[in-house]
Image (cartoon, rainbow, N blue to C red):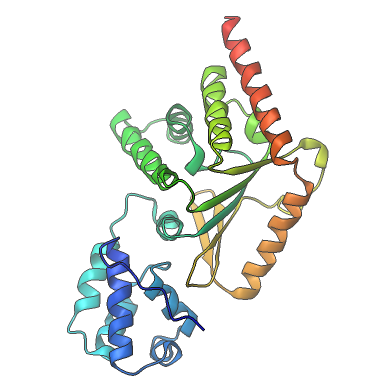
Amino acid sequence: MPGPKKLDPSSSPRALLGAELRHRREAAGLSQDELGAPLFVSGSFIGQLEAGTRRMQVDQAQKLDEVLGADGFFVRNCAALQKSKYPDHFAEAAEAEAVAETIREYSPLLIPGLLQAEPYARAVFRAGRPTTPEEAIDELVVARIERAGLLGHPTTPTVWMVLDEAVLRRRVGGPLVMADALRHLAKLIQQRRVIIQVLPFGAGGHAAMGGPLKLMAFPDAPSLAYLDGLGSGQLLDDPASVRSYELTYDLLVASALSPDASLALIESVAEDYAHEEQQF
């Protein structure tokens, strides 16, 4: 069996923390399960901390400093990690997304953040925060566009999205913004950077009518599922729960249009929006 993937401590503060945790645990002669016991977490959770796919909490850092004799190293560095440009309920999911090998997502209402064009992202934030100053909106948009920077790598991560047809039909920002947003999706598909399937209205009832779903897989840590709500979110690592949501996603894929048919629909709707704009 291959050993754990070697982390690059320079890639992010969380990778640094994970690499140090693994080093100190192995130096202490402890397994992941043995280190997890005094923290009341599973060995797999320790593995996720070491792999940088989960965020270390301050109380966990305190206990790790105590058990591993780290002289406050984990508390000091954990405090720095608590600062995030993302909302609290999404920060850990965004950080995990940045190191994921595969991202699969179902969105029922909006183009997912990773795939949003700048005007569309701005229209989304303005709609949700009508009294927020423009400077604050600018910061939110920048953070979202920067997050999409992970698509800059030609192949990693693998990104596979299922979008409800409502995502294409809801006029966020008006016809011009929608035409631009859908053309952006089409370009990503044509560049073979993402896989997108549209779940048509004609599919009727489906397995994810309860809301959006994001699945993330990693090269050396257990998979995660993220459930997004209005101003809330839940990151799950329980294997049985994750498998259940993976089945949900598989059922969505089975009901959705093929990638080619989805691209044709996206391009057609984009042209409808563009034509509508030209009439005014």
